[in-house]
Amino acid sequence: MFQFEFSDDGRQLVITIRDRKFDITTAPEFRQQIQAQWTGDIQNVAVDLSQVEFVDSSGIGALVSVHKRVADRGSAMTIRNACPAVISVIELLRLHRVFRLEPAGQN
Image 1 (cartoon, rainbow, N blue to C red):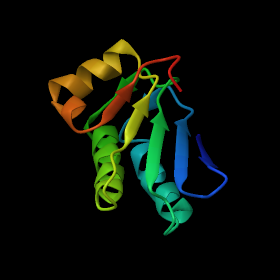
Image 2 (tube, rainbow, N blue to C red):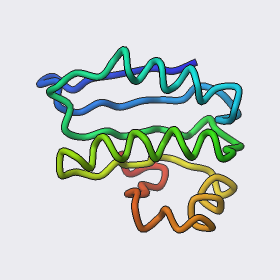
Image 3 (cartoon, rainbow, N blue to C red):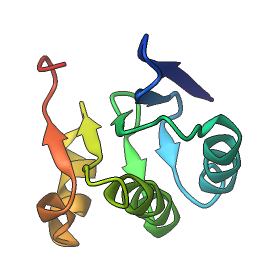
Image 4 (cartoon, rainbow, N blue to C red):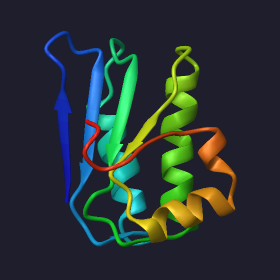
């Protein structure tokens, strides 16, 4: 359901969500997996949403919690490859001012 890839130096974590929905059914496991995978060396996090077609408040809350963790280190979380429906939710909540949004083909 989730794939975690670390850069060679362990400072960047790329998380790919491999589910059509990032919602109340998947967000709790996402939070648990993040906790298990997190190391003290992580400086940057990118979340690939290329397979996600729907996100609800639980999914957004999980993304915000990761962002807060990264922001404590002076960085910002990047959202990659989000579909228009997910981007609309992010923009509606004005989180496009918080997250870095990276369209498909830029990573």
